[in-house]
Each structure stands twice: as C-alpha cells, then as structure tokens.
Image (cartoon, rainbow, N blue to C red; front, side):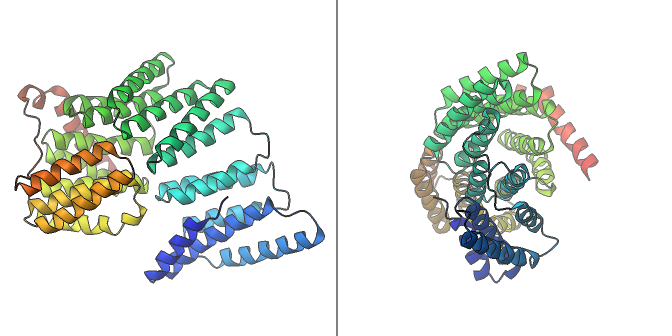
Length: 413
C-alpha cells in the first residue's frame, strides 16, 4: 500500500532546516499523490464525489502557493490539472506522473520516484500494454537497483524482459538483460556481469543500436574498474563516450572516464572531466558522484582545503545519496582524513561505511572497507596503488582522451 511517507520525511527534514519553500514543495508532492490515490478509491456516490472535489480544490490551492519558478511546482500543478473523477486511461495524467517520477530520480529522490511511478502505472487500469509495462518495469528496476534492493530489482528486470519479448522490442529486451548484469556487478558477481555486458555489446552492434552499445561498454568499464583493470576500463568508457549522443549519458560516461584517469595517475585530466560534470545541468546523482571523485582527487594530491570543501558539500547531501553512493562517500572521506593525519575521524567514517555495506549487501564495498580499516590500524593507509605500465601511460588512447577532454571543456565554457 502506498503511504507517500517519503514526501513527508522530506518535508520534515526541510522544515527542520528552516527551508520553508522546499518543505512546502515536499508537502505539495505528498498532497498531489494522495489526491491521485483518491481517484482509485472513491466509489462515485454523490457524497464521495463531493469529498473528492473538496480535496481537489484544497490541493490546487496549496499548489498555487508554491514557488512559481520551481520546476517541481510545474510538475505538481500539471498533475493536478489532469486529475478527474475518472481514474483510468488518462494519458495526460500518466504522462505527468511519469515525468514527475523522472524529475524525482534526477534529484536523487528515489523512494518518492518509486511511489509516483506506481501511481502512473495504475492509470492504465487492469490492462497495460506490454511495451508500457516493460518501460515501467525497467524504470522500477533501475530505482530499486540504485537503492541496492537486489532481489526486487532482478525481478523487475526479468518482468521487463518478458514483457519486451511479448512487445517484440529488441532495445528493451537488451536493456533489461544489461540491468540484470548491473545487479550482479553490484552484488560482486563480476564474471557474470562481464559476460552479460559483452553479450549485450555484441548484440547491440549487430542490431545497429549505438546508444545501447554505449550502455554495454559503460557497464563493462564499471566491471573492469572493480577488477582493477584500469586500462581496459578507460578504453571501454571512451568507446561508450564516442558512441552516445545522449547528453545525460555523456556526463555519466565522462565521470567514469575521470575515474579511469585517476586510476592511471592523470589527476589533471581527471579534474577537468569531473569539473565539466559538476558544472553541467545533469542529474543530482551524476553531479554528486563527480563531487565525490573530486574529493578523492584533492586528497590524493594533498590539497586539504579543496578536499574539505568538497567533503563538506557532499556531507550536506548524504540523506539524498543511494546506498552505494553513501558507501563511496564514507570511503573517500575516511581515506582522505587518514591521508591528512586524522585517524580517529577516518576510522569512524570507515566503520560507518562498512556497516552500510553489510546492511545493504554491497559485498565489494564491504571488503574494501575491511582492507582500509586493517591498513589504518597498521598505520599503512596511503594512496591506492596506481597503474605503472609505461606503455599504457604513453598510449595514443590516453593522449586522445586527455586532449579531447580539454577541447570539450573549452567548447562547454
């Protein structure tokens, strides 16, 4: 049963920070969702219709009081305008709810996005076309995967693939398969994750689906990075960057390329990549990830002031971070503090991160925290080892990436 409690949690949090405008936006989201939910429960009697119309009028009054220049206000007002006493088969309402769910994901409000997506799906009534079901299942799978809900995410991806088969949609079939590979990667099953990535990359190439091929290379880059194969990771991500034309996907890949450059010791080029992402208008998750990586870069090069600035900014965003990102924050902040001679604060952050990893079954992260804590206890925590292969460091691919980043930055400024 949908309670929309995540909206109320946000409203209370913002109220506690004395942010009245953003608290009212969160409350507006709660009221709008409750209003849509009421569409599916009123019985059509005169008394029920009267109560519903009173609720509709009250919600619209609240929404009109919201900051007019806030994007969330526009989403909520648009949804309220589409609400009627007939709950099903409202394409306009479904479109508005789905757009709002994407907005919430963009802002890192994953729990809220899931609840809004569930409402959007209910507008189909009992019969939902296979293609629409596959699309919604893929969306739900991604949100649950970001929340580290591995069994739920896997079931959603399997349902999406089955529906895509019925709809004969090759793109969604392969996206669902790739999603299952991402779940396996998150759970630490790297061989299976890599096999799925390679399979989808080949299938997408044969079907002439460059955007999907780019997604597959991005997933392969993530697998290679966890395996410690920095050169292969950078190569895979650069292939993805050249294939995709999607602006959001480009920023995501650029962040991954920055990580690869850090692993290869090219901090200057990595900083350029992350600063481009951070300054972009891309999603909260992608920009925040770039902030965490900049925090890592600055601690690696010994710039304490810059490290503390990014750490403080990221700390303010912790309640919006999904589990894997929260683990990443604790790891990078803890290692950075250790590098700057603060072992007590470092140990507290690393222990908290290990607890998060254990609770959320982030196996790869758990072992990283274990190793870092052991090194800290032995007084050996230092910069992670970088690749030293001189042939790779001077390769044309690395040079091309570095030059391309600077050209991209100059065009973006």
